[in-house]
Amino acid sequence: MKINREAFLHALHLIEPGTTTNQSVAQSNCFIFSENHIYAFNDEITCIVKMEVDFHCAVPAKPLLAVLNKYTDEIVDVSMDDDKLVIKAGRKRTQLNIEAEVLIPLGITGLPKKWVPMHPEFEEAVGIVRSCAATKSDRFALTCLHITPSYIQSCDTRQACKATMETGAKGETLIRAASIKNIVGMGMTEWGATKAWLFFKAPTGLIMGIRRWADEYPNIEQVYELTNPQQFCLPNSIPEILDRTTIFANEQGIEPVIKMIVTENQIEFKGESSNGSHQERVAINYGGEPFSFNISPKVLIQAVKNSNEAVLSQDRLSVEFGRFTYVASIGG
Image (cartoon, rainbow, N blue to C red; front, side):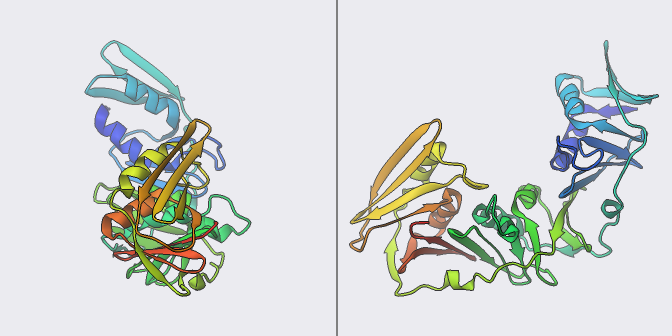
């Protein structure tokens, strides 16, 4: 059949987050073509997009993307020939090995019976809050976003972030931060839940499911409670400084981490990695005790763009901006 190459590539890139190279699930390194849909799935992410195709098979994702990217033709001819997927255009012909039998897990085809509108700022909230989730931890729950009916939060023991909103969730659920980050920028407008998955839907036709986890999230409300709070202002130049410093930030978590050192009338930012280091100072009006902590620059950049007011307590720094609250532990 004749297929617009760029439209084909666009559909495949939408569901690419569902593929993996470690094959933790059979055919998880493949794009699955079945009944006018394309699927990609692994143990934590499943992606589905509708596309009219007349072939039924599993095709290794990496070589298929590579071939389509190398072709320059507007239209390609795609068909099955026994155990091959054949792609033709002009004088070019490519054959890709396929698996004729597709193995779509039952839980992936069991989509939610009910979809509800998603809060318009939910994607943005996920993009910011996930920056404070742990990458590795003895407590699995800390690698997750904690989604409740009234807020989303994460914490890696040295920092925490909460976005207060009516999420539309019926109860509490945990979603791995490293997985749910893939919905950011996809324009999701609806969501629905099954027992094991939280599904998101976009007007493009993309459906992305993220596995839910049954672990209990620790009570971290005390993190947001401040003792003897003192207010001070963060300079408006911080976003530009952090952009430069982040180039050499340690990848300690999902997002880069840099060190912020506050002394009398100045803040110093330090970033260091195997490629080098960068440090930069900026003047502030502060005469209290010196302190330092590690931060996720993405969150602080968003904070200063919305409000440059910060609060310092005995052992932590807190910044509130819009519906977000960010807390970093001194010495963390």
